[in-house]
Each structure stands twice: as structure tokens, then as C-alpha cells.
Image 1 (cartoon, rainbow, N blue to C red):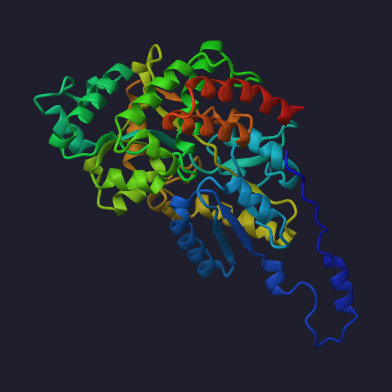
Image 2: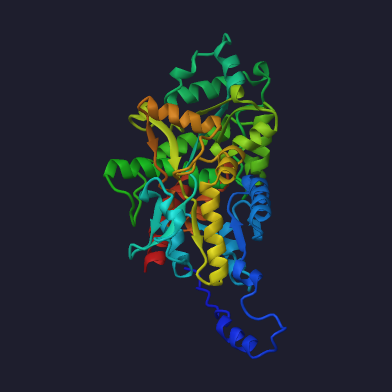
Amino acid sequence: MKKKIIRKAVATSMACLMAASCMAGLAGCGSSETEKGSVYYLNFKPEQDKAWQELAKVYTKETGVDVKVTTAAEGKYEETLTAEMDKETAPSLFQVNGPVGLANWNDDCIDLGDSDVFKELTNESYALKDTEGTVKGIAYVIESYGIIYNKTLLQKYFDSDFSSVKKIEDLNSFDKLKTVADEIQKNAKALGVKGAFASTGMDGSSDWRFKTHLANLPIYYEYKADNITSTDAIKGTFLDNYKQIFDLYITDSTCKPTELASKTGADAETEFFKGESVFFQNGSWEYGILTENGMTDDDLGMLPIYIGAEGEENQGLCTGSENYWVVNKNSSEADQKATLDFMKWCVSSDKGTKAMADDMGFVIPFKNAKEATNVFVKADTEYTAAGKEPVSWNFTTMPSEDWKNGVGTALTQYAAGTGKWDDVVKAFVDGWKTEYAKANG
């Protein structure tokens, strides 16, 4: 657990006493600038940086309150947050990724139980509470992820002479997905693609898709089988399933497995929107990037991630949140108030909710939320309406970042041929027990 940061509060009352003793013509404590406060938001999501920067400008123009947005690099949020929180001008608004993340920063977070933004939630289940039951975080977005597919290219496959699967409705299990991917890979030239799947990049900008998001699937099915919601010792019951979907990703691909260590998230995005691959594991947050690069709603769909688990034909998309806003307890009262006002404006005003729905592609769990135009969000709604069960986000129970990194390293070495799958299992199971004990010892 990281060392907690202790700062001395600004001696506002002393400044006021000093100012009161000064000549009347001098500016005293409590200037309009000080009272107004400011907002410093450390954003977690690089793909929404541009939208947040624009929204900050709109808010500043409308209210006169300065809003600074800094965005951490992909996979570097916790590292960046630790560095920024040790500065004099630390973020007044930042993010934790669930109970494990909150445990690291709980002492630095104010109680949000009486805040306006908490009262705007459609359901209190979207609040993150500490072990004492105090509301410390607010989920600001509900997202979905799965296997994004290019409808045009997939239809070209369905219509081909060599396809065994002829329509999207039949692509509802791992076996069917493997059949389709294998046939696409075998006939890549005829379809005009480089591979079935975009590169499974294990660079830091991309590896979270597999050491966290893909790893959620075996955790989800184990929790479901054991009727639990967390554990101090994962058993690894579904790690053979994890292996077969990862194997499919790295063999039916645009590149060789030995190249994956240096492949980035941007590489995978580019391969997909250029039509070099048919499939791309990612989430609803990718909608803006893909459409900005020429893809349309008619080009885009999303499948559940099938791993060969029993009953998966009734599975929906992975839907949930690991994105919880928290307010820095060490910020001045003026900055805390300014931050809380900004948060409420984002989730309740026309301009704020429109930006979050349309520009960021978010589904926000607040009373004044606007309907998202995001085609992947609509896909999640359609799956749920059809009776498919959404896969819960259980990676918020992963014991630590070190655990994720251990799994990621083992996956990278396995893909490169320098490690064995047993090393992945060891990192997953033994690493979980070790890291859980560290975090809860």
C-alpha cells in the first residue's frame, strides 16, 4: 500500500487576521479568486482527453472557474497519481478503480454522502463505500466491452464459399468464434485482411486489455460457479478457457506472436479501422476514435467474449464500471467546493451530459443522463433486452497492480515462446494469494 501523503492545510484564518490589521486599501483574505476556487482533474482515460479539455473550457467560460485537466498515459494512471498527489498543486478530482484502489487512497478522499453529485445518482449501488460504509467514490460512467467486429468484412466472410458460419446470430460460442476466426485467417488474402484479430499488443498501452479485461472472464465464471463476489485465493478453475481464447487471439492475428511485446494499443486500433482485421477486443470507449477515423455505425458491432464456458450462449457483453470519482481531502475548501460544483454540472447540465453522452460515448448513471449515440452501448442494451446476462466487472477485485503486471509479463513471455502457460497459471493463482495478503495483511 502506498505511503499516505500528509500536507499542512493553508492557514487561511491567520492570513485573514493579518489582512485585517493592514491598511484598508490593501486586498485582504477572501478575495473573489480565493473564494471561487479551482478544479484540477487527473483524467484516467486517454481516449477522452480531447473531450474533457473542451468541456473544461466550456465550464470555465460559463462560470469563470478555472478547470485544469491532465490525462495520464495509458497504463500509467496510478504512477502519475502518486507523483501528482505529492505536489503542492495536487489534483482536487481524481479516480480510483474500485475497492482495491480506494484502499490505497481512502484517507485522501472526502465523504461524498451529502454531495449533490451523489444525490444525482439513479441508484446508490453506483457509489463506492469504504469499510466503514462511508461514500468515498461516485461511478461516473457505465461501460461495456467485448469483441468489436467490422460488419462489412464479417458479412463478406459469411457470404463466401469457404465460410461454415453464415450469419451473426449463429456466432454465439467459443467453438463458433474459433471456426470463424480460423477460416478468416486461412483465407485472409481473399478477404483482403491481414488477420482475423487485431494485434494482441502487450505494450503498456495495450496489455490491460488482456491482463485485466480478458482476465475478468475466468474470474467471472469462477465467482459465478462458487457463488461469491471476491476471494483471497483464486482457484483458476477457468484458466484453460482463458488459454484457449488468448491462443486464438495470438494465432489468428495480423502479426506473429513473437511481435506482440512491442505492439501498442494504437497499432491495434489502426489495424482495425484500416480494415486489416475483422475483430478487435475493446470497449464502448473506442467508439469516438473509430468513427473519427472513418468508420460508421453500419460498420461496427460488438460480440461477447466467448471462452468456452458452459452456458455462454446466454452471455452478454462485459458491462460495469471501474471509474469512480473521488475528491481530494487535502485540497482547500474552496477547491473542494469548486470541484463538487463542476462534478454536478457535468452530470446534470445540458452541456455536461451532452458532452459525456455524445463526445465521450458514456452511459452515465445519473438522473439527467442523455441517451448515448454510441453503437456499442446500443448493442449492450439489445443483448440485455434479448435476455442475455451481462458479464460483471470483477477485475475491481484483483488484488493489486503488481498482480496484473505479473500476469501481463507471463502472457507476454508465453506469446513470445520464452515462457510456458504454467507460468501464467502461477502468476494468476499464486500471485493472487501473495498480493491479496500484502494488501490485507
